[in-house]
Image (cartoon, rainbow, N blue to C red; front, top):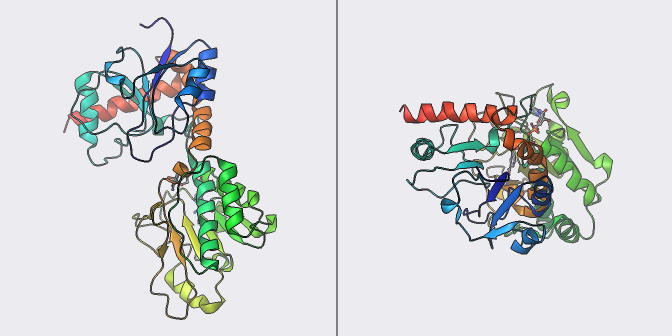
Length: 367
Ligand SMILES: NC(=O)c1ccc[n+]([C@@H]2O[C@H](COP(=O)([O-])OP(=O)(O)OC[C@H]3O[C@@H](n4cnc5c(N)ncnc54)[C@H](O)[C@@H]3O)[C@@H](O)[C@H]2O)c1
């Protein structure tokens, strides 16, 4: 066993991924409590290597984790590149292999053959079953910003073009305000799922770009209990869906309610942060593709020649637009669990994640 508890922050290999599971801030907090932190050099990461070096991390070569001592846990965010190589280390990351996703048996087979372990970040839960760390807030924040940018483009008779990550929150807020002519004042927005992580982020962005508080309609379960579709959605400029969909519910809007409103409809941008695009219960059945940073909007077709335009944004990796703050918030939320990692044989958050891993490996190798 290494002398001190350690983590090895690996580089991210997924294209465009600039976020990081550890940040200079959380790495320093770990170091201050006696951890040793190795950080792979990574030009893709939003944080400079030197920021980690300055707080006492040991920089190591890019993508060198396969040759790290086997008792050092490797931490990262996204999936490892596809391969058949056995995995002997302990990995903490999102692996997207517990819900029958494409290639899930192959991924778990690598751990099985190598004798390694996976603690999947998606399944680290607090005692009430809520995730200890998730990227929701900045997904909602960035989704609302994208929605406001799409509205600003429409007002100029244009369609929103390429979206690129912003250096920080202020840069995003200033860019949106500037596109809206200095402030978002006068814009009306409705956020459903407003009490959740994404919803709170969306509301925060709208406040920060200058919408009047009375023009930010915040709905959650209580307001949708009467059952959709809701005419109120058609009376705002931007509708943001941030719900966690867990069962079949009546649609929030339909093509019929949209066409029924005719020219009186104010709604011109829908941002589906929840992105249940292909879910048969998608409560916004007016589009069927996920949009992208290079083409952020899709027009709702079939509304008739005289109907005002309506565009949907359905990007499923919105936090990537704010890599610095999204990483800071996620890593800070993860920190208490990371501090418990040396006691992972008994600490509930880790024992439960390990139990799930073992069950999934048995399922995968039993096939
Ligand atoms: N597009 C992206 O980049 C991105 C990123 C992160 C999360 N997400 C997705 O966003 C969704 C929300 O995530 P979260 O972390 O904010 O979840 P959350 O559990 O924190 O919040 C969901 C909120 O929706 C509310 N809600 C659920 N059903 C509702 C209904 N029928 N009517 C009104 N309110 C309802 C809940 O009460 C809760 O307040 C998830 O589907 C998640 O996968 C998308």
